[in-house]
Image (cartoon, rainbow over all chains, first blue to last red; front, top):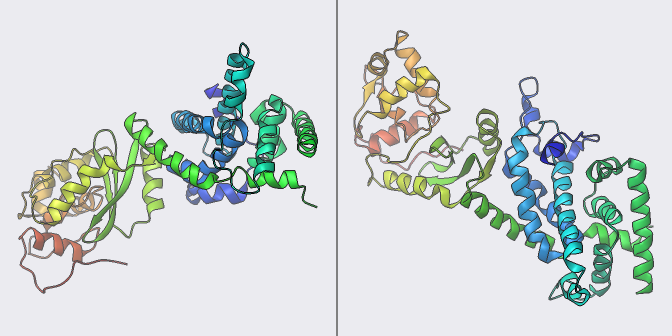
Length: 193
Length: 214
């Protein structure tokens, strides 16, 4: 899995974001080198966190965040320096979130009642007017896997459709479709709530 | 135009910035505890201003004067050593302590372990000889060159000293012109003079504050 991530093709380089961290570009003509890993944490840490909280909820986000960056750190030297680092780290985060959802699905089968508190996974002190937002995030957590991934990576992760397709491992067309279906479902859920 | 649902999704979960900052601190501790990084760096205060220090698992590999931009410092290490570089905190405690003691005049030799990996073979011979010059002492470029077995003489030794990646700790400031002149110094001659005066190898010409460059 790690090897697959490392060799993921990068389709749409984000000029503005990569140039902030792509310090290696300054030595263009010599060798393009990866920026120090600390930049990954400084520049993308918050986006990784947002994607994870949106996908698995705050309680599980912490472990996923740690696992995401530890996996990334291990694989980092093998990454091609011209890779889109943001799409790469968000793809790893996406896979860690999937592991959590699949783990929950496995463990939740026997006792349905226990799933509820685990799933509503406390945002203990919701700020005012966040009730509707909480409902929305709950609905996001409960979307089918591919729809949830597409919605989270598109809106929270701000990835392009092609990058979402790479992250999920589907065609760009399928990614668009999942995104559309997910959004439609969210609108319905939130409006009827 | 903006769909409220898309708007909320784009805004992301509440309090993310703060929570992410906390998670980043725990990540740094975990990387340190488990030794997952190849290079750990941080800031070290000194009379010259804030120095940047980098450590590998073998020891101190680089010490940079304040005017060297942090990005250049990090990118050089990423290119020459490994991009697995993270900011560290407690890993640098020993470096900070020994440098503090040195600048306070309370330490005459460093006991830090050093990583010589950034030093070329010839420079290594020169800097080994340099590292052996005692506190308060000095040698000439020609003497260091001779001791390093340099066929290329004082100028080559000067270049090797100028490439010292761990100044202060490898005391290249203790190498002077044989005529008594200070010679050169990568960190600037004011600093060389300051260090030699600190060690009592030179008598202060003028009372003054430590030279800070901006």
